[in-house]
Length: 358
View 1 (cartoon, helix red, strand yellow):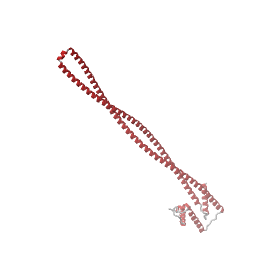
View 2 (cartoon, one colour):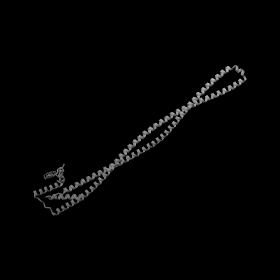
View 3 (cartoon, helix red, strand yellow):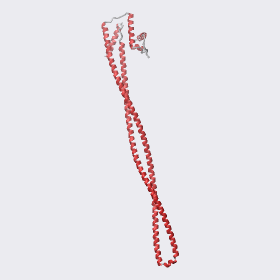
View 4 (cartoon, one colour):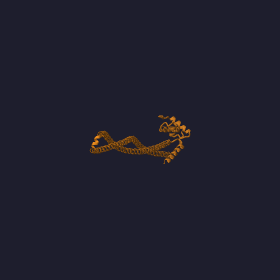
């Protein structure tokens, strides 16, 4: 850290060191030799006092013409005025440029923050859409599994229904055969009775002899008839059971129809879920594209910010160079020395600097 003040002896020592090294003891050189300590005004005052002391100690004062002194004074004054004007103009321009750059940087930072917020919101929305997409896929998979199970159940019930239908047809065929056999037996019995009646009328006496055998035959036929009635009753019971099975199968068919209706509703719901899934996929694609656009905008904004920072650094470098030129101009304002050659060199340096500024 620089000290608050410097001593005249330190300025003398630094000036002697510079002269010993063959360097011109300007204000900046002396300040650098002192470790960038002390104000330039103080160093300039000490240098002036040192030159006056050296001039008073030697007593060798060289006369300078009034024309040269007047020219030197006018040139120095003009140089100071132009330097002040240029410095003021450059300072104002620098301040305006710095203010504009600061405003631009602030606007770009705000825009970058806005883009970052938008990108974060889009990322959150994209995550939510992905979660909804995952849920929709899970629901769709469950619906597909339920639909497959329902279809398999319908196929099983249809197979069972086909088996029951085959069994019912077989029972109906058996019942029909039993009816046909019963009708055939009745017709045969009727024909036999008519034949017996005719034979009884024609051969009544023959039948009296064979009454016992006829009774036996009649008993046998009666037992066969009873057995036929029993078979008929059994077949009727089987037919009733077949009808009850048929009613049960019809109930199952109605339940199958209800299941088919539920399957149709599930298919409609599945179609709706498919449409929602397609919409979600479209939304995810749009959000991905919008996120890419926002990332491009953010990258462009960052590149613009870096470019503006580079321009600001360049402007600051220009200001530093102007400050160095101003310091050099201040260093060239050395008071008149006791030697004519020193003043002539100072005037020539000022003229060359003025011509270079022109």
